[in-house]
Image (cartoon, rainbow, N blue to C red; front, top):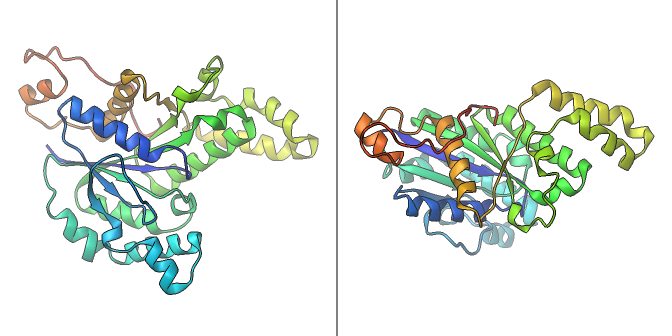
Length: 284
């Protein structure tokens, strides 16, 4: 059937590990086997079973103690060390995974890793060369929509990661279940910079007007950034997200018809329901 992977990225504290755990539990419920991989050398505890752990190669605590680096510098050192050992360490570990395996990589929260450093581009190229079908899941905290300037900054970060990694990309607005007021949520799921710019200008002052307009024009020109909501109290939420990711990676499309129908929850007559929303692609 193929080898599939999600690379879960986003700012620190945005709910990446919570997403990975919720996805794992959902896949257990629908009887899909997934393996969650920890790529954060600073991680300490997990809600999900860890199938592969970067800390077996290098840990942030050891780097800080031995090299005298701070948290950020130490983490960048760890990730560059991973980049130098992709073939020797990760390649050897991935040999035990093959056809029909599905990996979810839970990644660190330093956004420079995805925006302008080479680490994750090298990681992505390594997986692609190994025959993995990959989708990036970019998580953004729903708290960002309480401030238009924060939201546009987050949207630009997501766009930068999309351009840098050049992969099918699903943006997820996390922690929707914690929002008290959801009346304007749809305005941010499919953001129109032209509608958001007046609010941004009002909050930042007239001297930033040209900068705001330029940022809005950039998002509008690419027209790539939209979001799917993740509410961990609503099972349909993770079902919709996984459906979009499956379409982006073409999950199961090369399976035998009867097997594929069973994967989609059908009855063997080709009448299974589609878990996605019907318009998947690279620009979710």
